[in-house]
Length: 148
Image (cartoon, rainbow, N blue to C red):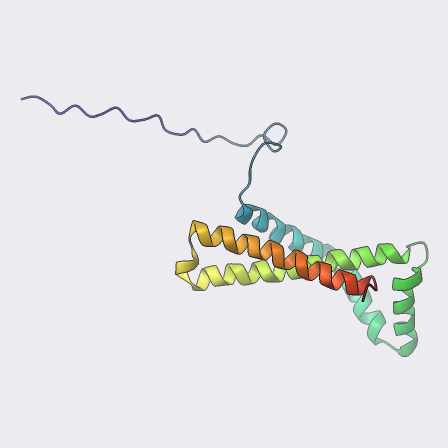
């Protein structure tokens, strides 16, 4: 009997680790990967800025005098820290919260709806997450810096 000859297999793709020094500049991360990394970065940023959040909450609610001092910190600065820097830190906190919240809703939707776990949905929802977080940050940043 003759044996059936199996056709030769095409060579398999080679998966290798990414070298941080040589490959990161040329590696193309998909939008879902970017959102995932930014979700972690925003969580770390919110955690690190927790003392600033507590200071803002305490100073804004303690008394009328402390609220006036709170407003003055954003306008003219606080000690050696200029007001524009405090506004930038607050803007970073706004972005971190908005991005973390929207990306969290995206992950919850993917956990609940099994039809949402596709490559196409992952890419479109990642782009929507990035666009919404940046757009809302720009709108609230314009309010923070007094543009309207």
